[in-house]
Image 1 (tube, rainbow, N blue to C red):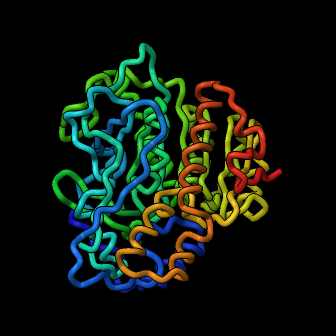
Image 2: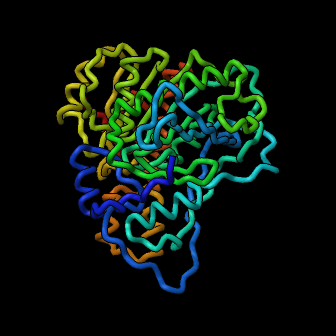
Length: 400
């Protein structure tokens, strides 16, 4: 496989990329929308920051390099197979000697910024709450597993605020880079970005997730699926509860969540973050397992979301935060305002990115509602947040 050409290298303008993305309801990652403003010429790179998770446990993380030998890679050439990077997040112990993992690698962050015309060295990726390689916290019982699927043209880190929140409350979360439909970097330094020749669809994402679930099964059986044979954190395999698996995704990943639940009963509960439910074929299987929609631009009464809703036969909810835009429930809502201050983005441009939902409130919504959903359906922990409107979250409406 050769190093991929950054987005825009084939002549598509940022305006055209964003327009095409929004037309089909896909994710628009940090650095690929709006007008690129010049960074101060003499300013050094500023490190962005993420809010801390609220759970009682420190967080650990480890990347895995996987190869799906059932899927030839047409872009890499004969004899090559589809490669994926994933990260596993989990409650950890003895974290002090383990470094914090960056939100993205330096090379992929620079490619992301450069693709939008920003100075690639204007900012550096934030550090996450995840300690690389730290041992897994011993609990005496296995932990529920949640898989995350990103938006089109994005990356597995785009909802890290939610991911590390779940891990800090005792979940193992597996985030997947869908190669050729976003930004990533393999251990040998190959940086991949969106390749329109690949023709990735939500079904491609679903196939990736089913493959990753098989590799999670390998982990639980004590095997190491990493093709580079890098060591795993102590206690990781023994911590995985394969009877309690959930999935969530943003945008295209939300659609992939619905598709995967319709084809793989290992997933017990699904959450879509503003997924358009557009694919060929669409997710039209009747689902008897819990499913929740967190909507913004792809509302419940719009097609094809409304059609998908009609196929939900089990527990179901739709919530929507006032003033939210497509990316409001993910990391963009928190990170873009920081980038805006560095590059001198106008208030009007910033509103085009994040709408009018206050970033701090968006973070709390993104932390609270996915956690409540998976707590209810993977842990059978009551709570009342999903029963109806809450005084703690006046922005959130329950769509009847």
